[in-house]
Image 1: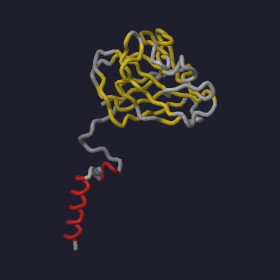
Image 2: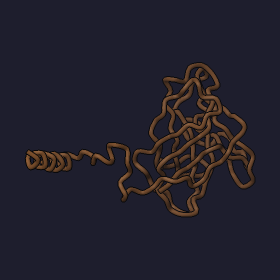
Image 3: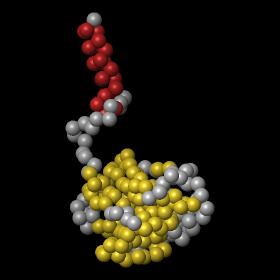
Amino acid sequence: MKYLILLLLTLCYQCSAQIGLRSPAFVAGLRPASSPICSILFSNQATSADTFGTTDQKVYLGSLYTFATSANVCSFQTKLIKSAGDISAISYKVQIYTLSANNLNTLVGESDSVLGDNSWSATWVTFPVTVPFSVAAGTSYAIVITSGTYDASNYASGYYAASTGWVYRTWKADKTLAANNNNYFVGFTVSTQ
């Protein structure tokens, strides 16, 4: 009997490997020893709120950042508050773009979508990245929060704070620069592998 059970377990394991099922340790939420660890690269604590997604002139809210080393981005957090209406049906993403003449240029990568939550009140919201993407050392990127659209009745706000050397910006729906605020940053936590 025990040989039959071992045979069945062996066949089940081989079958699951052929069809791409995950190992029991991974399914149980345990990280396989060979998986890279996602750890915080930087975190900015922001204190003041600014709306985004209210008009076509303010669809993207973000900061410029130059990575000191090449890395794979695996998670984001940003501080959000529901500012008006009902945001529970609005999907938000954190994205990283290259720049061209201060405009958002090429999308390098983005987080998974997170639905708005009407209970957000200066809440640090996690934006997972299912497929990590790479950023290059020495390249200036825009890290933005967006819903990709705008609605003057239903919107959230992101948080920013003063800090020398940072640049805080908003971009229009067409990804051209709307406003430039030197020595401020938008509050993001970026984790890399």
